[in-house]
Image (cartoon, rainbow, N blue to C red; front, side, top):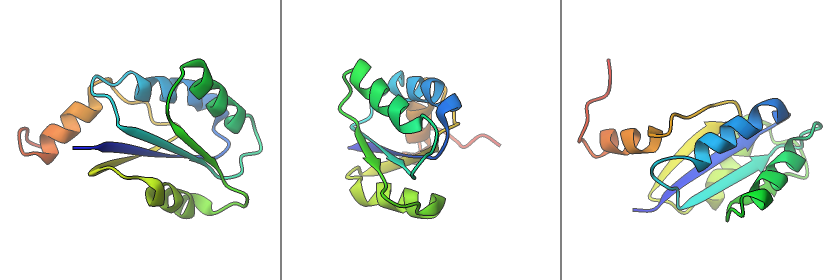
Length: 115
């Protein structure tokens, strides 16, 4: 099973490093990560590119030419995703290191959804 993640960014520079670390450090590694920036006016694009380069990650980074809004931004990322399961995340989500494992266990019926 191929697992993808699509992340939408927009002027989220102050959140990015912690969020990108939480994605990179998952106990279950993602098959693809697609990050789409919606014409940020802060250092978001620079920080994403620097993070990918510094960690030598094979992640896709797309910079929109015009602002699409959050729905359009996610839609563009989803159009590039090739996974059997696709996770979405915002730039300010911080994931626990076992989030993917837990979510897939729930999807596969091996664990009950917490009440």
